[in-house]
Image (cartoon, rainbow, N blue to C red; front, top):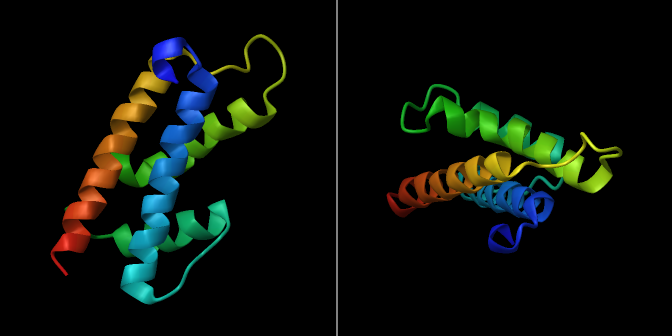
Length: 108
């Protein structure tokens, strides 16, 4: 998507990759499976709080990434688009997010 300039879609997909990884992490840690964005953010935040293995930028990504998804899904007007730079940053952060949780879960 990024390669063909679909920045809104790339930003949304990056966020959703992190969202689903967070759902898996929560399930593995608690046996619960939150379905809402707010539920995932809250439960992940509680689990990540105090865990120095999860960088602060990764903890914030579920909120920041949701903002990108909202722009992609509901944005109106010329300013309501995801830029190439924002898409690139979201993709990079989502990759780090998923890799971090994969490492944490593989240690269980």
